Image (cartoon, rainbow, N blue to C red; front, side, top):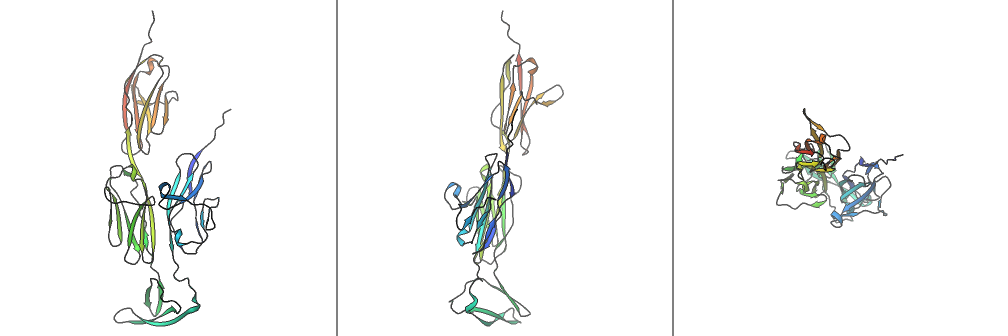
Length: 357
């Protein structure tokens, strides 16, 4: 009796997202994945040291890591601001990872109101209209720092902080090796001056060479002149103003058409030989490689398990105890849905069995 164990690579149930929080708040970021065996969830924070600049987050009084995979920050502090990575792995297939950012804002209105005094001042809204608006001051404080927007309409006044906000962006979905790729980060709110910064996988992006960054007043454009496989990654635009910061992260997945790694040649075989012919290709994603045998009418797929053994990016043609019917033209084809399929054809001849007199 044969027993099989089903294994399934990790798949997202709830991927984490960027988060904004005020100091002192309770923050929960979900990270949950399915798979068989059940994936292990781990959290890391970018600190510019360790593997890829990330340091593992462990259970503490301030940070909790429940069994459901979430990251819980009991009372958010400014030091919690930064780039985080959630990793889901179960030793089957490729691990899942998602990079996010946490922004922490100081709550400028969170102060003791017992020592406040109230006064009135004049706000000049335009040349023809003057409005009187109330203000508050704390007599025990030398000054109070904050960014306020005062609007006047029928003597009703409001005060608010204008936080920076990035318009979501993305890279093209089909970027092929050798092409140009770009992403535009636009600030849709925030007081001048605006400061932009780009990160790749949580690290600063050095400019020069293939990467250029062009920044205007409220827009920053990242341009990769010629992408290659190493260009794949998570790109984060970081926007900062005097009132706070915002980030947005977009993945870039670079694809590459199929290409041959090894060469296959015609074969002259003896009867009753055992021969393995490897056909191997590379690309992003890895191509599917398949052998076909030419008949009088067309090329047919070699389907017998004894004759073909496939793996990602490769296929072995297995000829066991060769016979004259193995004669013919064989085509190896590789394709990964990027560009056109590639193929090579070889001729296999099986010679008659030697006779011993």
